Amino acid sequence: MRVYHFHGIYVALSSSPCQGWTGGDLGTIVDSMKTVFVYNRAAGQRDVQGELDAVFSYLTENGWELTIHETRSPGHATELAREAAQQGADMVVAVGGDGTIGEVASGLVGERTAMGVLPVGTGNLWAHMLGLPVWSPVYPSALMDAARVLVRGKRRAIDVGKMGERYFLLWCGIGFDAQVARNVEPHRDIRRTLGNITYVVTGVAQALALRGTRMTVVVDGIARRYRVLLILVSNAQLYGPSLRVSPEAQLDDGLLDISIFRGQNFVDVARHFVLLLVGRQETSSRIEMVRGRSIQVLGEKPLAVHLDGDPAGNTPLSIKVLHRAIELVVPPWAPATLFREGGDDQESEITLGARLHREFRRQRRQWRYESTRVFDWLGKYLRRSGED
Image 1 (cartoon, rainbow, N blue to C red):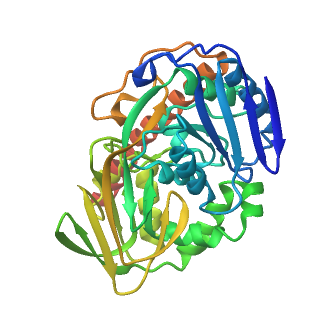
Image 2: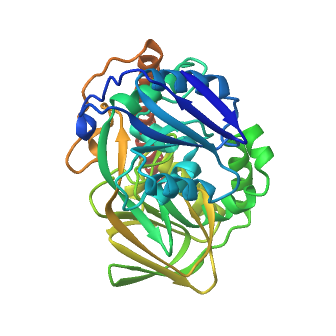
Image 3: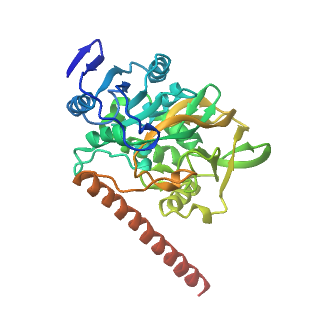
């Protein structure tokens, strides 16, 4: 195997026999897998070049033909993915964070080229939701395990949201969180150094001065009017590592889940956050959750908009869902609840680090359950105290 690097582009070639795929629509043996990697070097907080070199070696030893391009500017990943699909690539792999993944997906809408993911971003919410291996100090081999998913994973058709001429995989945020994303965007160096803390600090500062805005939300032709802090149009369940805003959302059901956070000020923001943290948002009369195929949002003043965490202009806007618009390679153990047809949830041969990572996630879910119990008890205690 030889890897060449020139002008920000890597090309890796190998004459090794292909060992094929296992499972799903990728189960057929092919002479070679022509794959284009779209790499955002600015993503994440670590230098992963050494790990990527090992990944490239592993894939070429499995008979894959690799071309790796580095992104140069916002939107470049979409151009690279679209060009790769038009040139007949079998797969395009997004190497970056959620923003890079969304851009690559945008270039593959309606194409036969599959999409894979190597998560090296800061939040990696898409990877966490699907159960893709994500690096941590106790899981240093995660990137190589994610590469094994590319070889052994399953291919599933999933939905994509569309706003104007732009697409999103995870969510479209309108209002509070989009303004936070816009404020953080010019400070990429700080974000790369501090990670998600940048968003927390910016969000708290903004929430203190936040005021609700009267907006009209039209879902499948039915209009609703609210004073809102945030509107979240989701194709995914997770909104943060432990915030499951749309627990019923599925990636292939042809619907978008809309969460409308009503309110006036910082107190309402804090209340919403607590309910999300303990998974009790459905109990609030100030959080409305609906589903639909098309959404329009307009109001008394423009609100900031983001797509998968990247600033995307202002309201008014119109969104629709494109049913099963791209093919995605997912782990065999991806949660069954993410798909209308159901996932496999079968055990796969994974490393000790992967098992530790999954156990950590299980413990985190248990913590959320116990927190919910404490929250219920506290609520009952406060009500009894008030009656006394």
